[in-house]
Image (cartoon, rainbow, N blue to C red; front, side, top):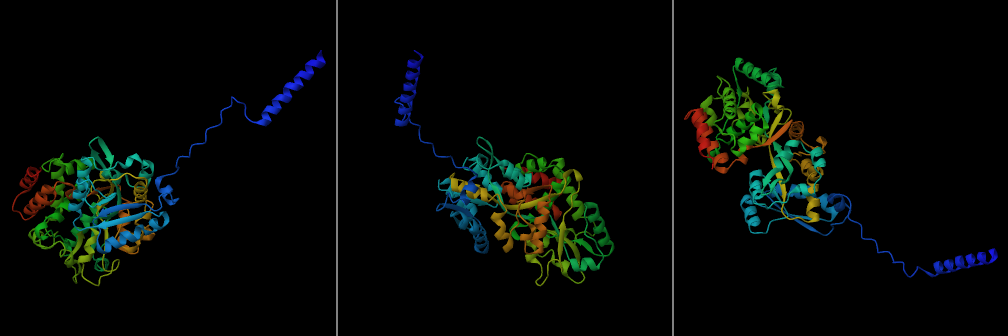
Length: 450
């Protein structure tokens, strides 16, 4: 009996082995083919892997002539490595043409806005892609001062969005001085506001005017005064108040703005401080105002202005030898070391993978490295290197911006045109010339707000 059971068991095993060798059982379902793997890595990584080779990304902006050439050269390496063709179109009438193309339903993939206020208009219409949908916030925070991200965050129809990323920038919180004569006179670059005032008093005691100031600029007379006001706002009140001021939520005729205006007045109108006196400030061209620094001996010794002002200096002067600059110090330590800036913010209008890759590229210092090396561009990116800068001015400005505790855009450029390039200019000019008092000036500007 046991022998028979054993034989049956062997037969069952043999049959099972035979069926296994012949193929799957009739009831076994063949496995489904594996689904293709989802793309991995950021859009920029995928671009460098060649995934978007042969695609085109259109871009519009204000860069023309040599600036357009420098921009195109700065992105050439990216185009060569990825096969993405960035087709840039520059126009001196960009502010008008970009609105027409967007409102007409034919925007470029990316647009470069030199005035964030113009971009904000399109954000409010819901025309701009929210970069938070694909950019890594952690990487952005690691590579930008938080202030740049704050300024790029704008209110859309459905709430705040990341409206753009910053490319080329420039700094305004700079005080220029005639270095050679300055050193020979035994003066020392001030590190604090009190030291700067002490230096000003010393120069007055030596028989000269410490400050070269001029705000005449034809139809734009007064714009230089608004820059000064913005510097004082950043140094005497909070960033929150500065932002409210830009939006019209903090009136010009408020204690905070009045305090800034009075602090500016204390510097400008103090006896002996401004070359030529208070009346000369209004009649002196902004471009001519620093020139007395380079007379022999100098007639004035310090001039606050952005880095573009060197193009108005007399010919033949050498940076670091004949002239230099220092950071306009903070006033109240509570507000740190703020820097007034201007710059270009890149916004996205068409959402495709290759456009995302280009936008991600613009968040890196590599996107402006070529332009930095060519001169004329400052990078706000923390992964940029000071070694890229080929002249002492650009390098020094970059260092000041990278070391800033906070940055804010030129306020008048963000305000409605009727104010920022209208009443703000006009009323400040009238106040400086003593045609009206400060109370009247502040009330006039508030009354003009649309």
